[in-house]
Length: 325
Ligand code: PEP
Ligand code: MG
Image 1 (tube, rainbow, N blue to C red):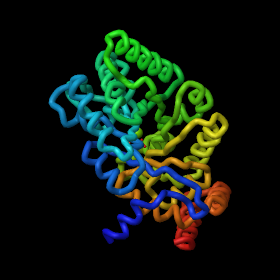
Image 2 (tube, rainbow, N blue to C red):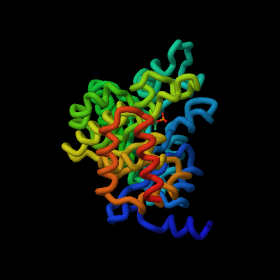
Image 3 (cartoon, rainbow, N blue to C red):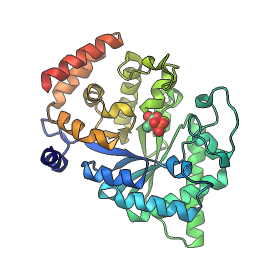
């Protein structure tokens, strides 16, 4: 098994017709970033910085953050990492940023909304990432962007952080790209406007799906509705991919479905070429890629979009999966 994993790790991630695909890793810690290298991911597609904060008794200062981001970058495959700013709130809270009871925490004061209300703290995080970015190929990703105004606000804050670092003579990487997570349906519906003002996007399908179908992904009574293979989800994804193709904007998908074989078949057919997943799934997905060609995947996704129910879609893709593997 070990030999097979090593062979798999060293092979390029490509479809049977040679089309290259990027398999990136979602990581929460420095150790995860090292695992990403071991399994043959080509970079860290999503570093969730909240774990650094959740394991800290108070706000980590700029030096602590810089040090942590630098270590993640250095452990990441090819020193390539996309670092996401704090995505606390919802189910993840820390006392030191203020905690209040909310009837609907996932609809509430979470993620970028919380960062906006702590501008000093937010600037420290952006500065620490820009500085650490000197040690690799780094992008910054902003979670839960809902409106164009929020994107503009974020872009202004990044410009300001760059200006302040420059003025103070602090070294940082001036070529860091900034991107938006598409995980709120409002952002997906206005994707054309968003693409005009961002370098890249990453689709957070976990949240995008739960907000699209109005069902809490952690509530067992309704979680069955959070199905990536539902017609509404696939239509929304198709329109986002089409918009990215029109503008030539790089797009990654970093939710759970990026590591699920049936979903991967459809996503390939819809044109996605950058997947970010838990490192554990990389070898399986890489093996799957080698068993399908671009025209085959396009045919699958075309068929899937004719189907009207989740059950039909799942059955169709299960059959295709058995055929090719
Ligand atoms: C997502 O929402 O799909 C995502 C990748 O972010 P998280 O799971 O951390 O909310
Ligand atoms: Mg999310």
